[in-house]
Length: 611
Ligand code: BES
Ligand code: ZN
Image (cartoon, rainbow, N blue to C red; front, side, top):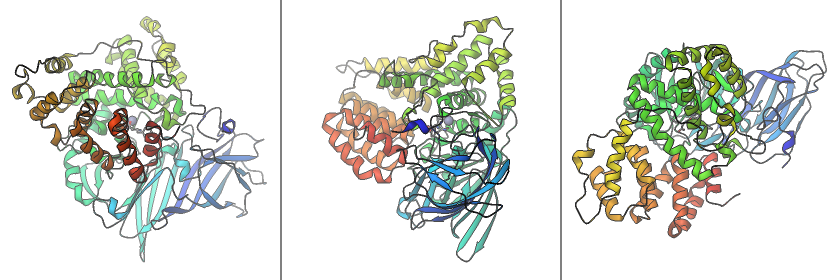
């Protein structure tokens, strides 16, 4: 691999914005569902920061470029596409115009490659309605370059506009404010504007037969009509969550906050695309019990979208902060007890990941070294949970939320619209709390750069957890010769969060016997459960016990649902069970063509099919 040409400032990008930076993006693209490509042109405003610079460098991945023009003179600009480095794409170098300029605009005419990693194309058959095709994008972390030639680093933030041409019966949504649409014959032109500067990974598009319901003064939920009512019910608390987030973080700057509920193959729980959060339909539990994912994506409106990690080595600044704010929203809307239960409960998952990676694995550090490492390979729960634990620790050290929350608001106000790294945060924290002697006890080096579990666990209120642990212990220690000590009366009032915690704990014990599994199923009706978090853990407990009844339901589910958080551990569990390993591999080979790139890429490694 020739990775030297990637930038030292962002090891995941070729661009050098300190020399020449893109300052605005105007997209003009046509969606061709037959050929599964986007084609058209993009206009980039460019600012020359170093007078000696001779070229502007962009990222591009499998793009077919036909010409590049200087907008003012309409003359061709020479360009060079370097060799493609697998998963990172190519360096696109474009000569600067030979007239004296500080700024200029160029147009790149191109089409996307046939299997752009940032786009998922669905045939009508893969949609709920079965009549129209569908497409959606997922650019985080570094897939924007497979759809748009751009400086694909979060250090660069730009506004964008877009005109998208599609068949007239389809709806286009983007991470921007919709302006207007025009229909010309069978074609529709949809216009958008995003007036807040954002990094490339937040550009997003979805096209399909979409309907909407108003769910709040600034919010609609979008989905195929078959599930739209369910969606409107599930996400009815969105405005309350937004208001609470504003109380914590300050004004919401993005105008609208819409939700798009995607088809089941979407790889993530949610994606914080500005103005339009994308979510998985696995959140449709029927009882609003998984709405914390929406609180999480709302929190990104400040942490991530206003203040952005400078590169993905500092991803915890996006995700750790977001989980921290997400839990503060929960603390206010539910109770501090539930906030702590959540934080404490997820430490188990962090622990599982640290064990899986190995305690000395550099990927268990908060700050990563991504030289030669693709961000999709580094992705895990570590930046989320170790990150939020660190912030909770800092909050404890400075004296609690009364001290920390004003600091947090000042942090948002100081760094909004900017991209920062962990040192920027450290300096800002130390300056703000300079008079607080307690901060000397913070071991920044251990937290940011040492692998393994967090160096300190904050004091959480664990009473809800203790109740679940008690039931779990009674059940796991149950001597099956006597009657089960756990009865329906003990469990019927448990909340979804409590059941999730209970199952998570069982998962960490010795495998259960078939008899105990059957008993659990009778008590909780897990085989029929709709809540995806519960279903996921129930299937894992069965697989761990080599319980035959779990295999078919697991295969059926992972062929339907593409959410990586579920699909990867379930494939790993199947792989670990020798009797079903081959079946799992065959299942993957057949179904990988329906998976999003990031899922097939990572599962293929988990199954040891690729290195
Ligand atoms: N931004 C992430 C999703 C993401 C991360 C996509 C990295 C691509 C690369 C999103 O905000 C997220 O964290 N989603 C979680 C939600 C959960 C933590 C509540 C998910 O997908 O499960
Ligand atoms: Zn997130």
